[in-house]
Image 1: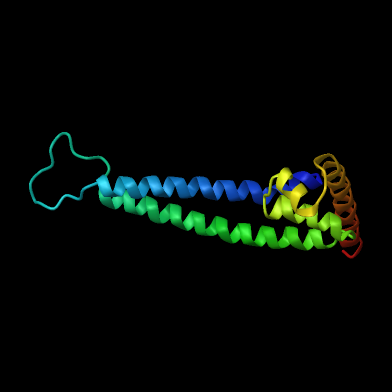
Image 2: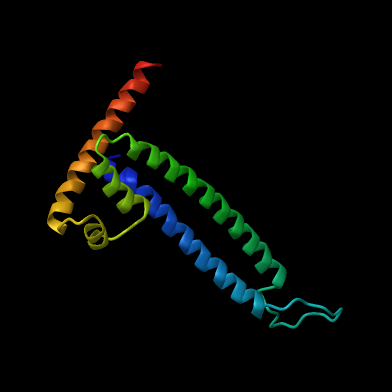
Length: 146
């Protein structure tokens, strides 16, 4: 996995969480439409297939998945931040943090740090290269200590 793929993991997990939150919202809407059977009368042939308890069970399962994903995202971001901090240049660290931890668009990063877009792209490329070099050295050191 190259530096860009590694750093982009948090963004992808964050979007997966957003998608699950949308699904949860749809299930909540569905639960408001679902009705529970309250009488002893036999159900009709056109019985509502979205029984309230089924919808609620699905909501609870999805909420648990979302919580697990959020825990994973927090841990992943912590790990990525630790890796970014090993890059020797504070300038590179700043670019990587704003792009991959804060998910800011290039134009906003350029304005915030006072670079042209073209120069920012060059700096980003150099930052990724530096990040890759540090990761490779770290992996080699880990292998040597085993």
